[in-house]
Image (cartoon, rainbow, N blue to C red):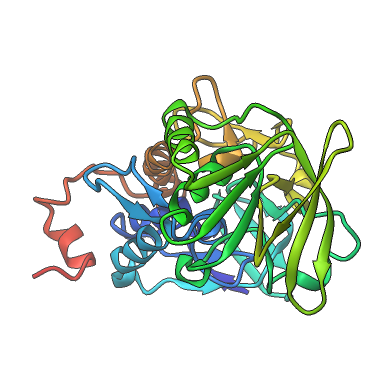
Length: 337
């Protein structure tokens, strides 16, 4: 049985920042994530896509943000358990016992659920021949945009992911945007940029069309698309990028007796505690009045949750708020001289 102060479920940006906020208070944590690395959605969905709303960081990618957070928490020597899913949570007096699918057991007075939207996977192309091209010519996310240079790329989808990547990849590849509706759902600014490129002949737009057939053996050679009137068109294609959204699965979290609102967990907005004492939910997975699904909001939520975690982990000590700039104790924990 591994004993610690806090068990963090989820190693995305919010889970990583939770390690920092707990660490500067002198609390130890372990982090459990069912993915094979830290970063959560930032790494799985947009590791190379720019993020513009992190305070004091004008622009960074999902990977850069994850890397910086990992450097920030390095002094705390936190143990991470990747490729591992929490299967069971049960109370033991003032503590919680967590069991994973790999039979690891943890005990702590606090659990922070920072699992984003729970387990997730992309909506896959339903054509029967699509599976054999996945990971070779069909992709549902982009980990390294350099792999897509000088290609004929067909992007399916009508939201921000499809449009943003259309803009980015059109800088060095032939891009065709295909959507089943005439209207796209992206931001007005992005749509204006897409329309400019379309008029300049730098992006082709095909609406309302859907994927009808994939031609090719080991690699895709072309695709057949069909509109609402049955008209078909063949497009020479090297790569299909499909952004039809995600299938969200809460998994075992839904069975832990927490107050749920659809696929989110209801929390107290003062400390982000759930209806179970000592279990907190932060980031996209939590819900309260006025909630904004921003990384910035998640950082705020975990900062407040960590204070309540301290009170539970150190019931005989009084919590004393200190600024990192002036506290020698905090600076020592961070390894600063």
